[in-house]
Image (cartoon, rainbow, N blue to C red; front, side, top):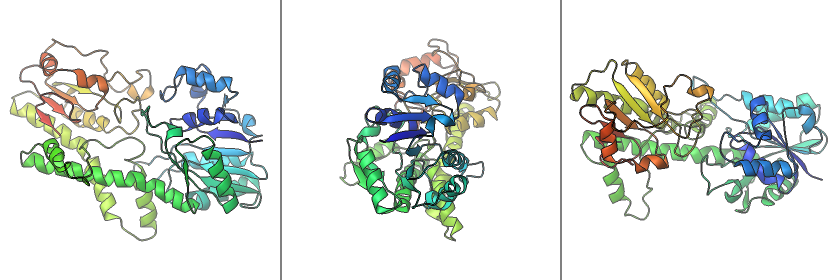
Length: 421
């Protein structure tokens, strides 16, 4: 009988646990007590699951817990913890290592440990397996086995949910690879792809977001070039996209915990082996510089219109790392705010997706609703493309503006912006 423990109940682990709970006995484990308490009340702060879906998983027999005793009798452990970077842009494997230690303490003969966290090639077998062996005193590929099946969740996307995204799978032996593939195949309606090895599966995942990062960097660099040439970047993209094989992307901020993070895992591994990945690191530099570019534009427009910078009121619309999503982690909008605050501007934030009780929101000055007809702001930056923002008219932006209207449009959704990225 299969019993699954999902280790880590974030935007990846929770939907996966919910999907598995429809067919198997599942335990959801997390070290965050507040998270467990909320889920047991039917509330998911990531908004990946509705209250009905969380409650349905509990009715299916799933248990949300922070007690290691509750996962002891599982025979499949799926680790879905974050893989962030540190201040030096180096991989921080602490969550993966600690969760591996937790699982190792309850690991038994013939158990399978599957990793979904994004890592560089080699982490599962070279970092995690030795920990599993050390703490369990079991032998890899004799007494226990491993698999790797990278997550492909797109936060905030209600169309491409976990069961509707094709899943890469792999295992530490051919037999285990088949077992892992069959397990996921039983819930993934989009199907699975069995990779030839764990390292191939790890590498496939990390290049997905690296490729996107490099492509966006190209568009961002083109946007800055066309800005100097006084050419509308979006008009150029529309024209170029008439060719069938043109990859249509738009310029913007690259934040979050995937695209802006994963390339550093790949470059770390490459550099440790003596290869310098200049293109990937260059792309990272371009994308990381976009926040300053946008803030500088706002400052220049205010100076041009004789607006005093110290004490200037600036409205930031949207602070999450992407549209229609409550997640602020690694949001590059925060960097725009920091740049503006260095000029002693008063920065207010409006974002109807964000939970204002979250500790990450405390340093920010939020407003609960847009102050139309207030003539309050010296500049407005539309930083995130939330759906409701697309409904705001040029007249409404003008009614919030003090003096000459300055509206900077980062996402290409404003009717008549002063400047568009």
